[in-house]
Length: 117
Length: 111
Image (cartoon, rainbow over all chains, first blue to last red; front, side):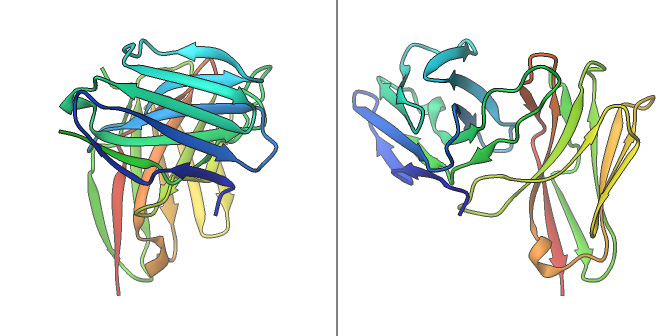
């Protein structure tokens, strides 16, 4: 148990559906992250929030829409996804985003396995 | 083009022997390198790190070696135990403090 929870753990959706992934951290951290992991590929950073402000958006298509209402919760809203979006979506948190020669360890949730039909 | 490569998708090692997982990188500006371990149905968990100014870091059974001239790092686990069976990810921390990940190596420890 890392202190980061994600729901749902598994999600199957059609291309016309709208769904949301939820992440919650109980570690008192101020930075939260969404990653995508496709089969046999490296983790890809999607979004970063630091103190509820989005600081990174790594050219993610607009069909993925993040929301960070507070430092403990992070959502990823999904709409009109494509089959190639099927992947494991991982949420992580850290004390803050790293900077000033300090790397802050990221703690990961178990992920949501998303299948788009 | 992948900046961090783990060329062995899987590795099988006898229990009690040494496991060596390898990682190559192309970005000479990485400040830190990290190894994460991932069990099925769980997220990655931090294992060990090494600063780019060092060539070795040891933590119990785990040692990470960094060869900057070859842009290569390796994780040694000795002795290997059944609980070490997992997927191991190598990652570099770039100048924006983002993690750049390899694709992972699945380690199987045989009893």
